Image 1: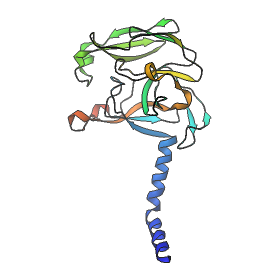
Image 2: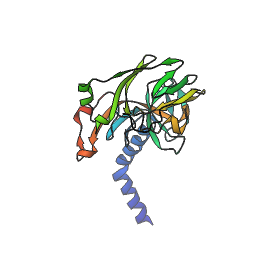
Image 3: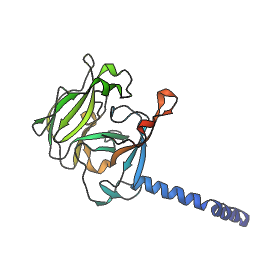
Image 4: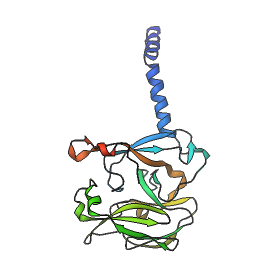
Length: 231
């Protein structure tokens, strides 16, 4: 018994610094900042498969580590913010863009947003801008700069001949909830299928790519994506 105790004591003495480091890192990633892998293309052309995005978990509030319980709250998500959250459908970690905030009335009319009776404007990207996007089979898509209520982003749509979830009637976003969508509008599982996302489910805001790997090219680093700001 004493031999086992001495072995455990030695083990703890040898590894306590490393164990403390791991514990601090876990707390840091849970409550302060994290880096999340992006496994799907629902946020093309803003975020690519293989990007590791930096998530600021102090952007809106302070949580008790490893829980969703808030200690303090100082800011609410805004239209255009890219956020991570647990899906109300299956608890998967998702990253989407906030399109409408509590109290907004929002509709989608043939893939054109209407928020509070203001219709978004759309401008096609120039061919040279499209060529700079690392999107496979880019010729199959339209790339449009969407502008509404002082916010803009580039969205990606299938060209004609593909099924779309391209319309829904005007709905009012309830208090404490947000409507989120992917920038890859025709290939995103978002509020059109999972419903509104409650404020308490939102974990943090993403604004930067830490690094990026091209999974289709032997995991080669995409150097141009390192530390890139998200639109």
